[in-house]
Amino acid sequence: MKFFLIGMMGSGKSSVGKILSKGLNLPFIDIDKDIEKKENLSVKKIFEQKGENYFRILETKTLKKNKKPAVVSCGGGIVLDKKNRDFLVNNGYTIYLKASISNLKKRLFDKNDRPLINNNDLQISLEKIYNQRKSLYNSVANHSINTDKLSITEVCKLIIEKIEIEKIYS
Ligand code: S3P
Image (cartoon, rainbow, N blue to C red; front, side, top):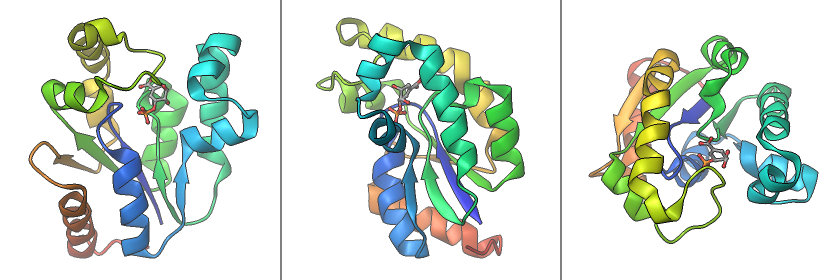
């Protein structure tokens, strides 16, 4: 089984994914990291030098290329493309990590590696992106977790419990 983690940038997908993959004894794949490795450039530089469209094409390719069971951390924009949404729905179990805008702000305010947000106007950037995407996240999620008051370990524990209850095998 593949377990996809989706949600806004800063929602904890990569941190949760790393620990969850250990708990489930599965490999961990971080789509952004895979793209950076292949291109030998940061995501931010790829956006700047080659454009968002180029990045989105690589994102779809990277999502689809791995056929084996794994925990996969997806970039926040993975749900924008219908092909990606169909892939998530048909190829695994998708967990949406929800976080409030105020929490996302706390996690992102000192980071400058996200090409789509303006750190001088974090609230507005995040609200705009969230409003465009929230129904898309919900439309593909098999399960959602509000992470605001939870530690990374607690989020992983809840996911593992849910997987056990639903008898989803890795
Ligand atoms: C993006 C989120 C980023 C990265 C890129 C675009 C987005 O990933 O893929 O900057 O469109 O929300 P994270 O969600 O891991 O920050």
